Length: 129
Image (tube, rainbow, N blue to C red; front, side, top):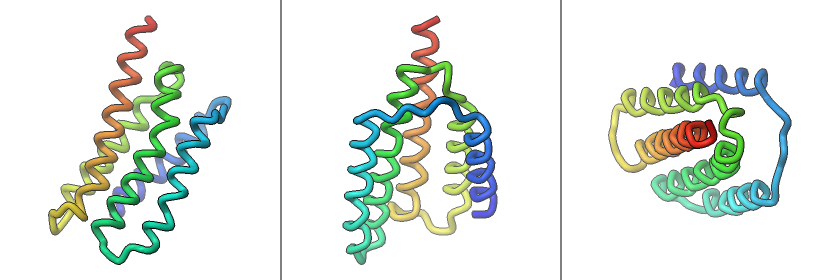
């Protein structure tokens, strides 16, 4: 947990330092509204698995604007950020004492989303070069 926390803080600091012009589209607002609308369902569930499923869905929706930006502006994205996310999530899974859908869904889905984002960035960079 400590390593995951430190990596998360490092990523946040790097993102803030390297921020670019921020453009918010209607699609970005759609992802935000979908993510926020799922939070009441999370608050009402008493089953940990359903809570993790809902929070994982919210997190995946958060990748929508990043994938849109990576597709249109692949040279503005820093692959290192997303590699760090994958490393953080893999370390989180390795550190688990108990493996179940409830404990592994969120970090594995986050890793998969980051890998898709990394591949999108690299594919678009190659296509535009």
